[in-house]
Length: 359
Image 1 (tube, rainbow, N blue to C red):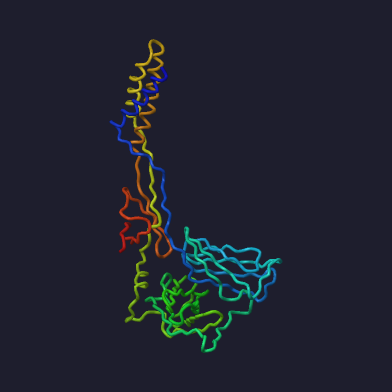
Image 2: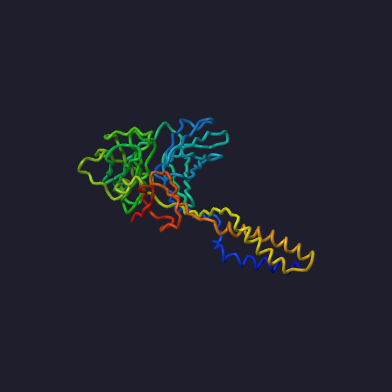
């Protein structure tokens, strides 16, 4: 009898798709972000003497939303940097008794965003009275700066970007400092002999249009410098380059994740009734007398439960949540009833609460 009831259940389940068209269940699915990790600057406030209890204050500038840490040569531990504002990470290392930190010790910063990691090595001493002055090298081996420019914004407001470009000897390490800005800006060699970097203005900055901006280019242990000779505010005739123009899109960003969300539906009285009737009919075919009555009751109860569950599955709804990482470091989530027509990594623009793909 039990075998006949089990076979009846399979027949019951097979009957219900005719009345309720159930969707296959999906677990919530997240697509990992294709975010990039970038370090724009790495700075330290050096100590006069590396005595126990002295504090090294590190600041890192780069991609927002990451995890940053610093390893120090001669130290018994490292330091994790906290993101104090979008793209700005700070941390303090207190020198311990067992540490052997000297003026020659190096510090390496690592910034992880998603599964991407960027690294930078500090190019100034941890111990000393101040930053070393640039020293001119003999003319035969001296690095040379041919040009030092800025692509300025229309105004010096929080969130605006200063793009610095230095041209000179290839294969070096270039950086810049802006009066009124804490820290150093790393200029990466984007092509042979051309170095570029940027600084997004923070609320803590105190930048004037005529602020002194110094560019440095180091090759091996030789370094030379140049001072910017133009304003940090764009004039009426200034035309921004392609990168600056892209920054003007304050509502632009990149699709970071697309999550499939399923909400199980609520059943009505129809499913249990239909299931109960079908289950009772199947149960009545089993056995005779008292056995037949028991099978009928069991079939009705089981059918009612199965009918209710099938109806809930039939009414399950599904929507898509799209997470966008904005260029300004923030993020927004948008809901779609159907699968959106773009994938993770697509460049998009927010307009009137909806997303459009940016070519």
